[in-house]
Image (tube, rainbow, N blue to C red; front, side, top):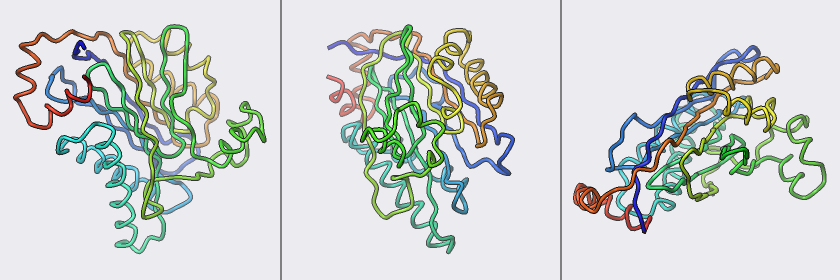
Length: 276
């Protein structure tokens, strides 16, 4: 099997919006690097507005998740992402106990790119959209009461954005001692674009509007800004955040590059094995 180094352009933006007093969303972008020594991590989190310290929860989730992924011991990528979510969940749960703050929670949707594969770890109702050519697909499923109703065919899918109980989560990071994330794998192609966004954005932007902005924005910075602007124009009543990346190229690696990468760190050897 061929091995690739992904060349990715990325950008992100997060704003308070016109209604909230503070921003409880958090985003993380991969450091700009073309190194073959590690994958690229992008993530977004939305602290739960109904509970205190939502902003703390989202920041703590991303910091803990990133720390675990960056220092993992060579397990398969899906296993590492699972453990990173569990660590973030426990950290937030313990912080709530320390602060005597009651229950603290957040959504978490993280994308890890290695070789030509996309790995997603997902809890809550932030979303990951894949835009490929003329098509846009939501790769994640919302962990909400309303989404459960849609899956049970109790209400039509088009009602999910406007339903009064849209934001009631059935699963989140930090509220309970244990959490089971969705782990998703998807093969990438050159030209693919990925959008991670909180519900303050996707609840007011239709899929065709998202597709149009991605198709007409010349950079990921412009795309993330235009998505935020459109959400605000559509009167989003929440914090609004987006992370956008564009996979420009999958650069084939020579055997020499692969050998050098394999010997650079023991955990990398295992990452390569996952992609074989």
